[in-house]
Image (tube, helix red, strand yellow):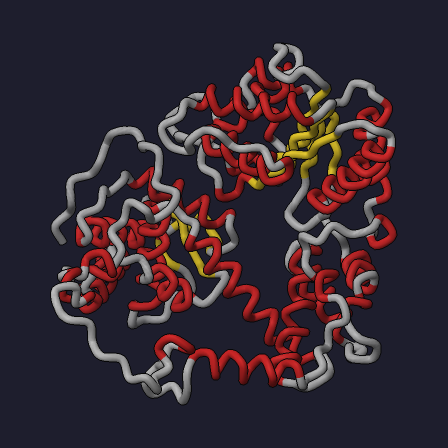
Length: 498
């Protein structure tokens, strides 16, 4: 096959959304005037039509309004299995008596936040542990209680909270904090998101904080996602932590301030710039995995989210067992219980049963994968698409996907859509990151004496589902499928013959 010229320059900052990739609708070439009929007389409207009242839609059996009202009436006549559905939303801030297996962490966070109530110095906090182990739950619930205590004592204590998972830079993180404090205080943001220097955004953030609060807590969830430009020596989360942790000492914030950073990365401190590590200097609070017994207790403490008697006896044990197998993630267990209830409601069955939990488990796996894939940068999508192409289009049985084959397919895909083809090293790095998202798994494999070793990849979920999700990218659909299958087969042949 003809190999495209490789890009040997260092990786540039990756596109973290698809905004730079033309959308299929934007490429249609439909003349706007033709589409809107702006040069023609307006069509006569039948006085009896549903255009104004309900948006008539041909072939759908009535207006949209009719269909909405029909479903609303149907739901009104059906008793939901839920009594308080908010209790099975993982982001709901709950009372301390519902927190399970985190007494030590809860007491430590309370100890660290209490100085805000007493007018004392607040220490910075680093919470680390796997996903779904209660990091966000504990800090949010405790901060809420401290804010209430401060209010009762006449202390203006504020909490600014952002999740960095979908934020690509320090600049965007500062603006996200501005949006949060603006929503909570009613203060005008006062500056534009684009075209404004990051330093000006910091200044405006501090200005609002100084006007409204005597003490402030910045909660930075999933901070390890805030990496910024991969070519920079210092990650953006290090810069952000430096600025916030120095704000009071530098006089930018006139009152007391502290930062609580939440991460899955146990090595985060080692990755900080030396100045940042010294300035941030946090108290560490470790959150280990939940075990199956703890997860079951967590779900039992939220059982009153459902009406009495609607949960069959095996629902909570099964949901807890699924979550325990999935690295002890309590958030997924709660999601699973809610999804099972929603399925029971759609069926109108009136009870939540084991089959609802099993069906919900499969759907959650797919939903989570799709959410992760949609948030991938362009190059990671191309890497993943190459891997799925081998898994889906190979006519032979494959236990795993050879890395060298996947890279040649990646090269073909990027060349086909006129995208930059990165080096083999970059491809392996992207694949390694995909493995950390639990979309694929990676192993090293040897081929015998003198034949070297290579990476082998396998999918944790159905590769066809992954392929369908990626193909919603309008550029990926430009790849000719018959040719792609020929490339897959020829590369497998070549790999097996060497």
